[in-house]
Length: 289
Image (cartoon, rainbow, N blue to C red; front, side):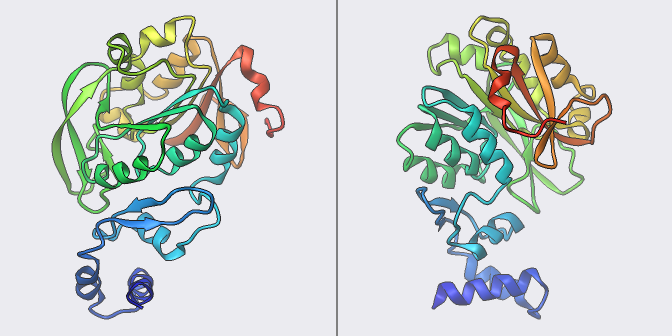
């Protein structure tokens, strides 16, 4: 009964139908710091409802879910490009939705997430995935500590770049490079990378230059280009894509559930896939424009 009542209140709050509903909803969600979301075929995903961020609340209102709800085309891509023998890095794991998908198709998954607002529930999610590890660090181009900015309005939004225009809380988090982690034997070499770090993608790639320059470079990289955020870090527009081109990757824009040859002019926020020439056949069956 309590769960049903909370769902109705959250739905009403989102649609603005409860007068004074914020205070009542906030009270009810005080204990809702770790709520399991059931997705058919997967262990539970845990979310924090206390901040009332729209994405977590929408997952809760739809609970239980018949499938992974976030960017279903990406789920299809991951099932196609990841092999059963692969190690996959989920860089910027956030709630862990893509981590869940990777855990089904890969031999090993390593999720990276430095956001302290997300880590407690991500730990619980990953604890039920026997082939998955969580590293609570920020991947960057150097080892040390970095300032990490978390939106006060949406705790899922965290970045090295304070770019959103929203009020933020800044915390210090540990930073490591992929190359140094590999050299120290703390992580294996990955075959697939998913990188979504709100504009700091180039810093992740620079910190993996030895990996990308070697014979065992990842065959596929899926990443976000967010120029609005990258500029705040002094990174030029399109730099991550240009870097991967120089390393011998073919790049496509992921748009409208198809792959498009990478245009010179792209949206401020774009999802891209980079793939080595010898593995282009992995995209067979997808619409290429």
